[in-house]
Amino acid sequence: MISRELLSEVMGIHIYERKKSAQTSIIRYAFDAIGERRDGSINIYELAHKCKEWALDNRYIITTMPNLTEKKWRNTSIRLLHFYSSRKDRHIQQHHPDNRFEGDTEAEAVFKACEWILKYKEV
Image (tube, rainbow, N blue to C red; front, side, top):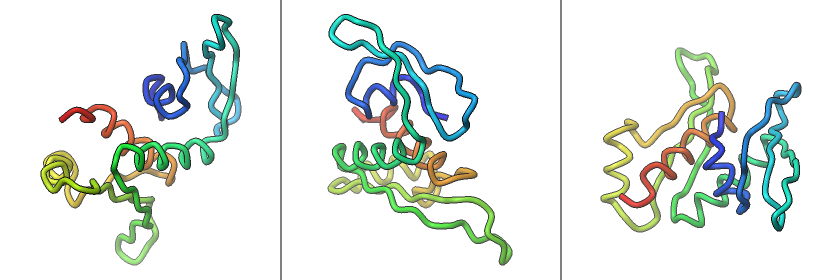
């Protein structure tokens, strides 16, 4: 779903671990709060929104659209574009045709795109 590294980046705190959660819409984690280890949680939809804001801070735009296949709604597709760099857009296209990332849910597609941004941030 979302890596510990991306969760740390997006939340702006050092996350020690992602924890298992009985609820599929909640992500639980352990983080460092002034030298003290604490537990936290966030709803995946709120986190997906924070990821979109984080992407924007890194000069990427995420747009969401349903993926229509054979006249049936299949899953969610998001498109990732860089603000100022057509070179970075071409780099995305090398890995993802039409700059698209797909997931069963919008949150899943957003997390995939943001994981890609994190991986290739310095390229």
